[in-house]
Length: 229
Image (cartoon, rainbow, N blue to C red; front, top):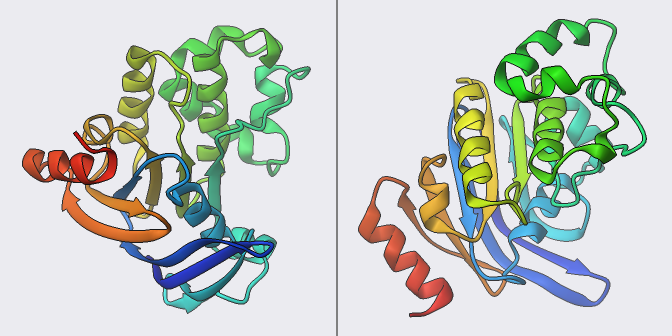
């Protein structure tokens, strides 16, 4: 279980989060929606301990609020797919998938190829030669090969064609396990409905209403609150 209670966060003297609370259980996907600058990505950074913050961050029963980032990631097997898709463009797909992995990580390569079959024929291709959608698949496959207990996805579909995003989200859903808690940052409530279990509004650095992803009326209400219309 991952939970945040009344979290505040700052970049220098600028306060980005004022009061964010949320909870996501193992086997569950919680999507955070809101406008640009609402605090969604800052919430991800607060979970990781990458920003100065107050409040409580609990991971599987342990208060990690004062833990450094590397300890949180190591102790709780946190997988992160940031908006920047931090891959090595001059390295091949295979090298990107295996970099930093343990000696036994190659066992997970077959699973990654099964999840993203179009990458199998490109294992020897430099990542810089791939399309945006293929690079995102590499980033996701590399993270999931580490068997994370907490997965943080910061707008994984940013800049990609809707059909590619739908395919990526469907593959993420197929890879979910009962032990994996997922926080997904998105702007489209309709899109996350295909992947998330719960959807929570983040607005002006504060957590707002939360609805079930299957609640179409609730999703429309959150979008109206977030984006107007």
